[in-house]
Structure formats: C-alpha cells, structure tokens
Length: 190
Length: 190
Image (cartoon, rainbow over all chains, first blue to last red; front, side, top):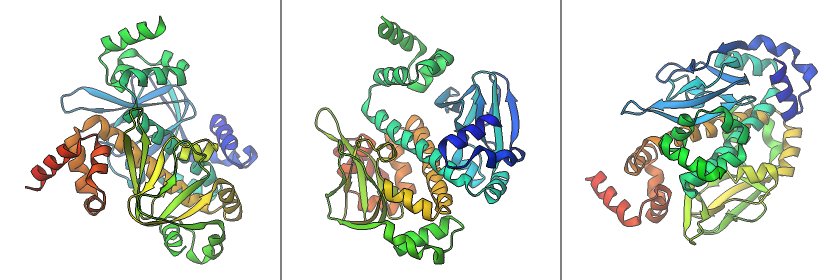
C-alpha cells in the first residue's frame, strides 16, 4: 500500500497518516509476464494501480492481429475506464509486459472507499485531469507528427521506458512493422 | 449558473442548495461566432464550462492550415488542460463555432473554490474520469476505424451535433478534403 499512499500524499492535500485504513479496500495482485489483467469482451470490474511492472493495452483486430494502443507503468492507474464506470464489457485487454504487481479495487469497493474517505476525490480529480490532459496532447500529436517523429518524441520523453518494452509492441503501438522500427532506431541512434 | 449547478447535482452527491455561493468564483463570458476563447501560444489561465453554443479545438500546422482536433458543446468542460494545470502556454486554440456562452474559472479561483467547497472534487473526479474514458475509446477508434467509418460512427453517436458543425471543420477533424466528405455524406444518406 505504501506506494499508493505516497502517491496520494504527493498529488493531494491528504496526509499519509489519514490513509492507514484504506488498505482494506484494495486487493494486491501479482501477474506473471504475459498474463492478462483484463480481457477484451469480459466484464470490467476493477481498476488497477501499478505498484511494480508495466502493461500494455491492446485489442484484437478483425484480421486476428493484436493492436497495442497504450502502455502503463509504475504509479499509473489503468483499466478500461468506460467499461469500469458503466459496468460494461471491456473493449480492450490489458497484459503484463513484465512480472507486475498491482493494487486492484472494484467499482463497488471504490464507492465504499470514497464514502469513507471523500477527501480522496481531490486525488482522483487531479489524477484524471492529468490523464485527460496527456490524452489531449496525444491526440494532437497523432494528428501532427509523422510516425517516425512520434517515435522520436516517445524516445525523448520516456527513454527508460523504451528499454523495458519489446520492440514488436512498440512497433504495433506506432503502427510500424518491426523491421521498419528497427531501421528508424538505427538511424536515430547513429 | 443554473446550468452548471444542475450538472454538478446530476453527476455528484452535492445538493443544488449547497451551491448557491459558487457563482462568485466564475465569470460569465459571451463569444461571437468565430471568436477565440483561447489562443495557441498564449498563456492558458482558464477553463470553460459551456452553457450555450459549441466550439472547436484547433492548432496551426506548419503549412499554415488549421487542423481541428476536437469539439465541445453544452455541458462540457474545455480548455488546454495541460497548459491550464501547469500554467504554460496553450498548444492549441479554442474558437466559437456559434455564438457561445461560457462560465470561465481561473486556476487560482478554482483553488479557492475547491478549498471552500472540497465536495466539488467528487464532481470533477467523475467529469474527468468520463472525459478520459471517452478519450481512451477515441484513441482505440483512431487505430481501428477507417476515416469513413469514423464519420459513420460520429454521425450515429452525435446526429444533432453534426447539424451544427460546418462541413469544412468536420472534414478537417476527420482528415478528409471537404469534397471527399461531401461524397461520403451523399453515399451515407442514400
């Protein structure tokens, strides 16, 4: 829990001492590399705070190829938020890229949590405002940058993360073939 | 103010009667058709709740062409959220498509508002979770759908809105030429 409590205290005015009792609302889960946290087409009951590891969000194209649409790593919240809030079925899967540990909370437990600790809404307000702000920038870049420039931008912003993601997933995310990504990497590194 | 108070009461457990005093934190502003609410490259001080009207978010491509990346209408919050939260310069402009009325609040006034009414964090938490959820779906569609299918999807989801947006803006949003959009519309309507 300490990772989440630290994160909350960093992004809101809630003091760590107020948060000793929140542990009971979460379940700690471990996933092996390549294990699914969430499966497309299944009900989405939970959202996840990543304590350790990293994951990718993906869906299955009609041609059977997996398309990676996002990543998440330590201190990020992830799930299919549309399905989570509406209690619907997930439109994408989430899979561990490395051995991953999360704190999971169900929608029902979150209602209890926020009822007991309404001050946590301040934290979630800020977390989602940041996520939405990043998403606005991402959409702008999807319009503005060539795929090659998207890769450059990503490498500059998240150099450490790039070391952790297999190239074929990064290629899928960027809409490249793995071969083309390999060429660009060489060009970019030289 | 009534529109915002109704919206808050609808999306949170805050009661309308608790909100009489929040009016003082906002400024009501009117914009004529084509007037800018926010200008790319300028400091972004405010976020806007749209009471009436609709706007588009756009940036200037290096070739001088305006690229529309999003729309917002009644009961939506809009601004450059990255610039708003960091106090930076806006990466895009916001321009009225119709005569538009908004409630504007500065970052400083919002801090005061949330300090006086911390229960509003519940509302903003939900608003931004919804916005982020919609944004996840949009990114998935940007990967998954052809531009023509994006138009179909948009028409099905927002038929009334489509009547309010000039075709050249919709074409820019979808990455079409206006001529091609006109062809698709004919095909789709027939």
